[in-house]
Structures are given as C-alpha cells and as structure tokens.
Image 1 (tube, rainbow over the protein chains, first blue to last red):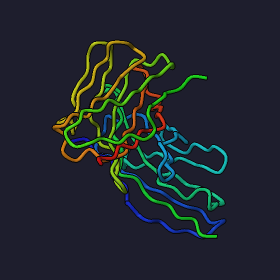
Image 2: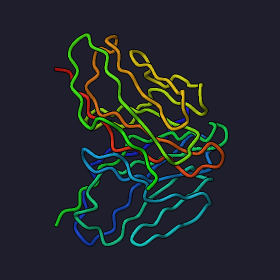
Image 3: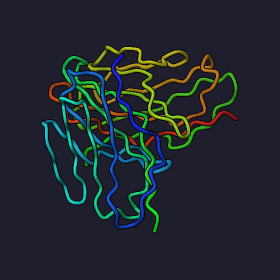
Image 4: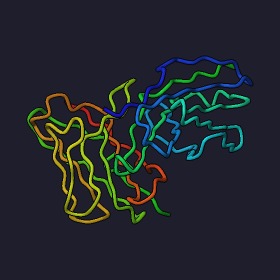
Length: 112
Length: 113
C-alpha cells in the first residue's frame, strides 16, 4: 500500500513566522510531488510542485525534497492569516501510472 | 479559460434516490478522477478513468457508478446502495504522460434529506 503521511495538526504559528509542513512517503518509485492548499469548503489548489532533490522557491513558498529520506516539506515564510488552510501533500510516479497518492492534510492556523 | 466544471454546487438527495454529479473539462486531459471528502478528512478515491470508455474502481467504489463516453466528461452516479452519501465530491483531471499534478473542479456538496 503506497502511503503519504502528514501530521493532521493543527499547526499554529503567529503571523510573520515561518510555517513548516512535513510529509513522508513510502513508495521509492515516486518522482513527482505536489503541495495543494485547501480552504474550508473549497477545492484543493495546486501551489507547488517539486521533482528533484533540493529546494524550489516560489515567492513565500519553498518546497524541499529529500528522496533518500523519502521526505517532502513546504515552508511558508512571513505567514499571513490568509495562509490558514489545510495543506495536502501528494506524490506520484510511473509505477502508479502517474496517479497521485494524497496525504490526509495538515491544518495550518496563522494567528494575528 | 480552460478548467473543470462540476455541477451542481449543492445537491440534495432523498432516501432511495439515485443522483448524478456532472464533471466536464476542457483541458484536453486524458485522465479523470472522482474523490469523496468527509468533514475534516482527506481525499478518498472513488473511481478513475485514464482513457475514454475505460474506468477503474478506487478505494471506495461501492454504491457509486461512472461512465466515460467522452474525453471531456466523467459523470458520477451516487446510487441508493450508497448508505452514507453525504459528503463533498471532487472531480479532478490530469494528463497521462508526465506528471504535472491534478486540476480539481470546485466540488459538489451532496446532502441526504
């Protein structure tokens, strides 16, 4: 059973701080990883993708991938109350026909 | 604009009734997926289709049915056999080759009355 694991949270951070969201995966064949943000009552929205070991930065967001440790993370710098949402981690690869396996999500709360 | 359209946004079902949720995409994506999400929970895969006229059961297919007669459309029927259908239903699509993630529709919230 291919799994993607996330701490359900809630993760509470003060406004302006760095929020660190973590994810581990079991399928070593996974090659592509994605972070989705889901506001309450809304559908998931893709915010970051990462395919290679290392860091990928986009604005206030940084995705980190460590394939040896089977670990993916998302850092949100200068967290804002509008970042309060559930963040879903997903991984996929050719072994699964490029289908994604989703983690259960981490709820982030940014307090003013 | 390309995207996925789910309709209706809200749907109410009476006991013993079948209902159909619509999902249409104009992204020219080959693969389409249906997920169910319960409050505070993650996504659970109901059915998926990677090509027209073919679809596969996901983890919780019992009580649901789908069809894929056109590349653009992947409707989901919630049958009377699904005893606890109240949930948020999400449709998604993706390309088949390469992996660029899924695009999600806005969802349908189904409530049993």
